[in-house]
Every structure is written in C-alpha cells, then in structure tokens.
Length: 385
Image 1 (tube, rainbow, N blue to C red):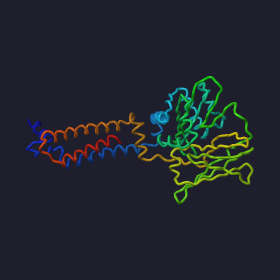
Image 2 (image 1 turned 180 degrees about the vertical axis):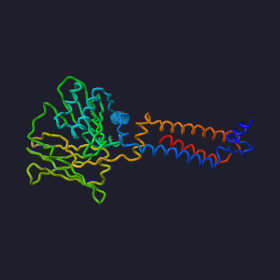
Image 3 (image 1 turned 90 degrees about the horizontal axis):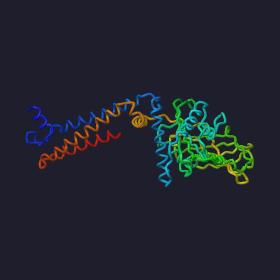
Image 4 (image 1 turned 90 degrees about the vertical axis):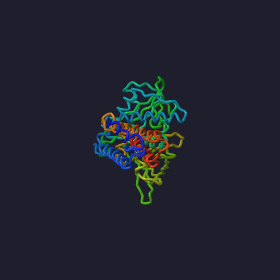
C-alpha cells in the first residue's frame, strides 16, 4: 500500500499532490539537468585525457576508411555516377603505399625507391586498364579530408571518374617532419581489364603511347611556401625548376591557380598568389599541389610540387570526442552506457509527462509541461552528441 501511494504521489496527478506529480517539480528538474550535464562532462573529459595514440588505433583508422569510401560514393552519386566497390586488392595496395611513405619518410606519388602506383598494384596482382591514386597526410576528420580533395581539381577528377569501378583505402601512422602520430592515407581507384596500361595519379596521366616532350621537371628542388599576413590573408609562393622548351607553368593549390614565370636564373620559375584565409583552413588535411607544364608543341606534363613547410594541425578536444564516439565506442563502454542512460530517461520523462497531461486533462500546470519538455529536449541533445 505504501509503495502504491508513493508512486501515485510522484507520478500520477491527483488532488492530494495538487495535480502536480512530485517527480516533475521544478527543483528536481534542475537537479536532473545538472546531473545529466555532469555525466556528459565526465565522458568528455575522459576522452580529452586519452593519449593521442588512441586516435590512431586500428579501430579508429578503420572508421576513417569506411567513411572515406562512403563519402566518395556519396559525391559520385550526387553527380549521377555509379558507386564504386571496395576491392580487397586495392585495400592491400593502398596500405602498402601508406606504409611505404611512413617507412621511407616521404609524401609523394613516387617513392624514394622509385616505386609508382603501377608497382604497388602489380605487387597485389591487380590487373588494370586505368588506375588512380589520391594521397593526404595530417588529418583527424574525414569531412575535412574530403573537402581538401574536392578543392583540388586533380584529386576531385579521380573521385568522380566514371571509369573507376573499384576502390581501396590504406592508412598508416608515423612521423612526418618531426611530428609523431601523423596519419598517412592513400586512396586507390581502378578498373580491372587486360589492355594497355594507363596510370592516372591524382589526375596525372601516364600513357605509354603519349607524346614525348623536351620538358624536364626537377621535383626535388621545387617547392611551395606559405605565409600568413597581418591582414588575415595568406601568400603562397611557388618555385619550380623546369628546363626545356617551356611555354607555360601553372601550379594548382586547392582551388587557386598560380602561374609561374621565368627568372634570371636559368630553369627557375617563380609565381605568387594572395588570398583571404588562414593556414588552419589550408591544411585541414595536407595534400600536395599540382604543377602543370606546357611545352611549345602543346604537350602537357603534370606532376606534384611539394610543400616546403606543411602545417600538421593538432587534434582539438572536440575532434577527439567526435572521433572517439564514432570510432572507439566498441572499445570504451562509457559511450554506450551514457547513451543508454539518456535513452532510458527520455522514455521515462516522456511517460511521466503524458501521465501529467492526460490523467487529469482539465487540471494542468503549464510551467511543469514546459520545463519537462525542456528536460526531454536536453536529454535528446545529450543522446545525439
């Protein structure tokens, strides 16, 4: 009898509790809100205090890879292009490429050992008619990575190439320019067919039947530098060493085209561009610019030109939390436990509110209904974030 009377007092509106269930009193609503916010804060602090190595663990990298494939297909579908299929051999070749960059301490489509895309594909016995490769380093957010690739015309061309049917993602973690725990990512595309091999690297085409050109590009000496200015602008300067019968030299940096002009020094071309922005936006994910060289006969040579001083951004506390929630929820039960608690109390207070409204429909307290709706809304937000 006592339990029944207590439950009625706390949950059921009636004359003895002035049609105001005690469970929904204002002071209790404030306490509930503070309790649930504190719970979320504890989870957030727990994640922030995790070592940075946690965010480069296999579970996290797999989460990144799955998102890259999904977003690549989403972009293709928006353009009316069919989805591409995850291919085991391309995952192997992409992983081998990423690890090769880590082990040989470089960031380029050509390894210091001379290995190119075609070599990595041959190692895994992927017979192709056309293949492509996108590279990036220094990211913790797939949305930012995809934005960087989409802003680069050559990388974007690979993503929306109608001929590609297969995809593979490879990731490795290592030190780049003295910065540890840097993520290296490789995206390999391909179409299997026994025909003349064409290798397309970040939009750069190497065709065995292409015309010869007198242009010689020295990628080891060429570079792009960046500088932030006091007026919230950035200046990019490109220095390229090119010999031969050169007609035009252009460097593509994200969505910016920078024309380079010959200098007094033989073979040295220099160009500069200034735009509104900052280095954090430019280096959300590091991708190398593209250099496009046209000779006097109209033949075009495309290659990459490396950053002299790329900026590897540290992972923010908010980014740590977001990535942990998506990639590490299976490892750390704190995420699932907290979400389970929020879901339980969403249902709990929704039922309590419905009892308040409909048991005694003509006896209402608008402020109780309003504050309970706010409490339920808070729980929904905490459940989602």
